[in-house]
Amino acid sequence: MTQVSVLATPGTTAKAKRTKQRLLRAAERVFGASGFDRASIAEITSGAGVSQGTFYCYFVDKKAVFVALIDELGREMRAALRAATSGLTDRLAIEREGFRGFFRFVAEHRDLYRIVRQAEFVDEGAYRAYYVRLAAGYTRGLRRAMDAGQLRRADPEQIAWCLMGIGDFLGMRWVLWEDEAPDIDALTDAALALVRDGIARPNRRRVVAKRIRTRTRGATP
Picture (tube, helix red, strand yellow):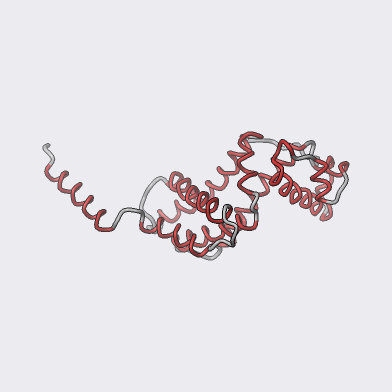
């Protein structure tokens, strides 16, 4: 996993934590607008309202703040999803509110996609960690639901990555790419319908199942 070189001394006070957060928020805007290669530390410090000397109290270079930003965005997203699903025990209800929470997070962090995708080329370890940490929590929740009999038995990690893909592309197309405010309820309904019902017509599923049973009974030993 990627190790970020950050000077630890100023991180012990509330003021220092606020300063670091200002730097990360400014970095989010700058990297989102300019991309990693064109972004500069001067732009980040200007946006945060601090000196360049202050920047180097927290991060050794531009890559260090970029990697820290990826980690922070991932942490904030996971916290937002936990808050959105807090207190829920039914897995379909958790899926609904999880999708809704994700779409809201994307709407509030519109540079998220561009920043995360740059990470694949800036620091592949940070890029992978962003998704792996998200999938790990998702997998645990799905496994618990399967153990409780709420979901059919399957590989929970594979299902987690499938569901992450659904949310990722819906968010990109209808939250990020649209100029108007997204219809988050409609997106959530679309995602949940796919999770709950699949894409095959109900009668088609029955026909396929019947054919499988017939072939099994008629198979030659």
